[in-house]
Image (cartoon, rainbow, N blue to C red):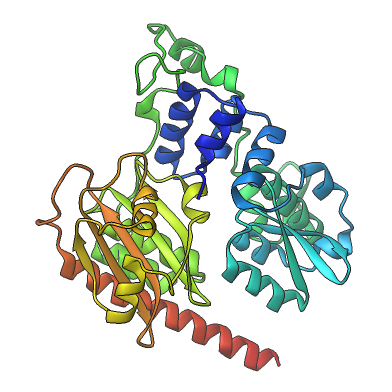
Length: 381
């Protein structure tokens, strides 16, 4: 698995300082490294697409192609499904549906798109910003509006779909140059002109005090999140939020057709693009294959081996000294692995039993979600 940062450095598209600044921003916002590089003005979309294509092995698709894609093709996925999967159909070639995806290596998502559209899917990689813009446009096209009168008798157009409100509350992202402005520029009041960066001599970012940290979930919040979850990603975010109370770097891996795939990441270390490009066959020797066969968890150092080293690399540049790797089951079958560590520390004080209990609850939530989908399909059919 090649890391996105390595590819960008090799191509000369970004400097070490720019990468570290964007990494800091992506960890704080739990976002993608590539999206932060674009937002900060360190990278062009063309450069990012080329790097993502090399990393994923999928052909790139620029946003211009998504803008002019036939409406009948784009509508093959409902806006809600497109948002959830971060995927937009844009063409049909040789009876294959061409789909722009933020994570084109997600085999489960590809299978779901095939089930929703009834077509074989050909995945293309696209930037998060271009896919989001295309999905917003699709939601706007498919959302009927109703006209109402306000107190001043002015005619107001109100979206009739809840999907529209997300766009209304999203402000315009500032450019990279705007982000480097001083505190005085931002506040409009007298202030000391200070620029902030988390590492010396790196490109400045906005005042760290204005950036919210990760949101941890206590037991009650975790239970509520699982009960209200309507997608696997919401369940994944919940177990990560709960486990982050005890572990500082976390990854989730899903199992699909006897292969382990990187799924989600959390904390100051993992790069989401790199995690999602991770893949290993369960038939090959690794800690995943051992735990899959034994059904147990592992806490301690990573065993030697190339595949195990790549597992540790998912947690970030600093290789873990000790890890916790435990399975999440649905109907007794392991479907997800949770990986976590605390860099430079032992995991002796980590309450493994609490995390295991949370993993059991997450498995039940996944099973309930699957059953609900089966009921919906049965009633619709």
